[in-house]
Length: 217
Image (cartoon, rainbow, N blue to C red; front, top):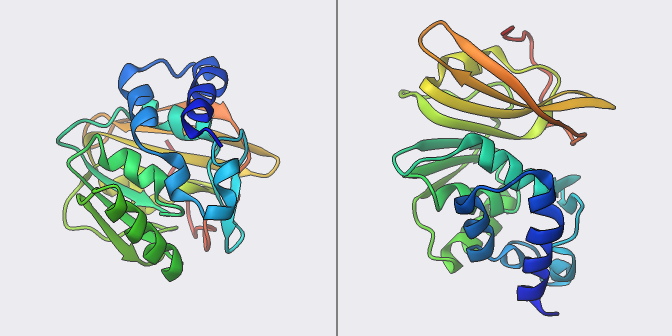
């Protein structure tokens, strides 16, 4: 398979038509080899317009969803990122390539092992992979500039209201099947938030995603 042609077609036929035009995002998609973050047997499907199953009833996001979320989060070189759900490690690699550091939390230990190998192969070292359950929040001694949840949640867990720095951005797929939205939340200051819907989609929920209470914006 000609991976370079498949990558070009993915960007031109899937990513750009979905209003992802940020030059930095498009360049990252060219540079970080998506096929290196799936199994050998799945490499022919790495650029397909689908959520690619990766085990444990989990899936790698469609390329256009990854690109659209990355564009909305607009990571900066000094940003510290919390990712909940490492999965294949590909989104982790994208985030790490345009931020200072990524902490990625994953509940499945074998995913951590695979992602570690894949990130090392790409010489990406500014990532800390942690085994744990971040579906209802993640304890932290410092605020985060970016938080992204890679599985859906019925409501945004209230614990996440306290871990974003002022100006911080949080992306999450919120709702219940068949009605879900990709949402971007921005913390304006200590008490003010803004939110906007990016697009409609349906994704599998994070393991243990049902929260006891929701934070209402």
